[in-house]
Length: 223
Picture 1: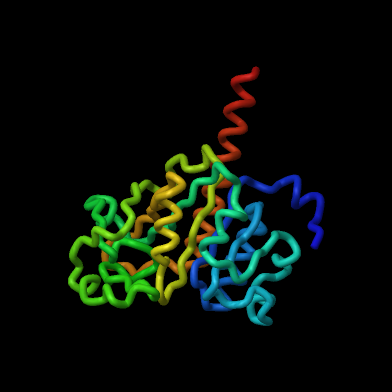
Picture 2: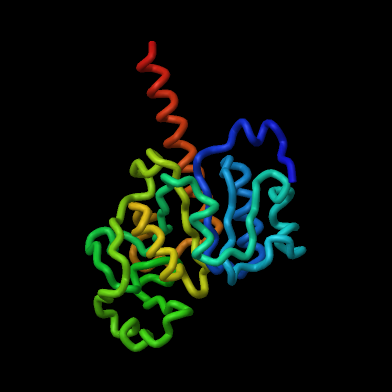
């Protein structure tokens, strides 16, 4: 598939990875935001709804023809579709208490309700430990940083998890191996997590803002 020249000229060094996103409306909205921000590509791991399902197409409003979409990827294949120096960041929506504690509990990861434990869908044998809220040494330890801190120095890939199962362990491992981290979108205590499409939009356009400011700063330095 070929893409409009205007779109290619405005492409940013930011990729989006959708992790087990199953809601067609959410995925379509995310694709629309990715196209609007100038995302270089969108990767869908196995478990995501089909990007070409009619409800996704309807919600995407033409985004499918504005941004490259790669469907049905195993996690082992995801790095093959990213720049060699890319850093992977996992969206974190657990609120200000996480930033203060900077803990490594499973409940601090991904798209889950505030303070509720995440059950990794491929690691159900850990369910009892997760529900106890105890620290999980087998979880990758990722640095927590605010979503508006500078995370676009190198090519970046942002992982957005589904609202039912959250992010996968594989996404955390990939973030750790690339020197990435957790991007915290703070919500006040007692407020439920943001919709995944809303959070993806916040992060992608924040990345766009950071890159624009870097270009403007370099331009001022030259003059």
